[in-house]
Amino acid sequence: MEKLTSAVAESEEKPAFVVGERVEKFCVKCQEERGHVIASLTKRGKISRVSCPKCGTLGTFKTGAASGNKRKLDPGAPYDQTRAYRAGQTMVHPTFGQGEVTALIEPLKIDVLFADRIRRLIHAQQANH
Ligand SMILES: [Zn+2]
Image (cartoon, rainbow, N blue to C red; front, top):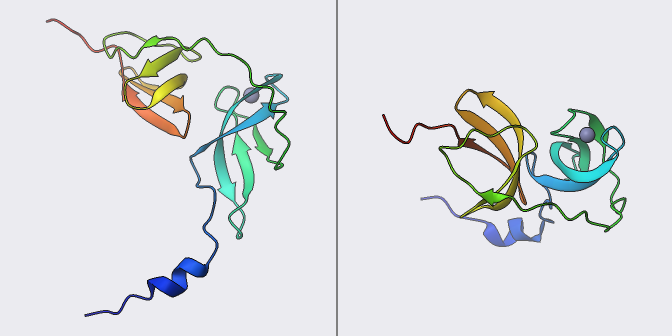
């Protein structure tokens, strides 16, 4: 049996960010503030690099750089796996909430950026034979 030293571990500051999660950042290439994906972290758990899922630009992330001036996105229609999505389309997923299609991975798979992170969903499924 191993002894857990959870009390000691808890004193360490929890990393606030995780690679793959979403952060808001102004993209100079897209000329808009949009959801970016955390690409790498520093040893201290701070964001070091983020990538724009729309244009693919890898940029640095400055804390507090966000303007707080959020664009109002069209929330989009409810997620429908029989529908064929394109990059840039928005949807509302029953579990994950509002998302934006960032990439088509395979003919039947898409990457969607939700409020917290990117998730892979299926789409263009045939409803009937
Ligand atoms: Zn961009």
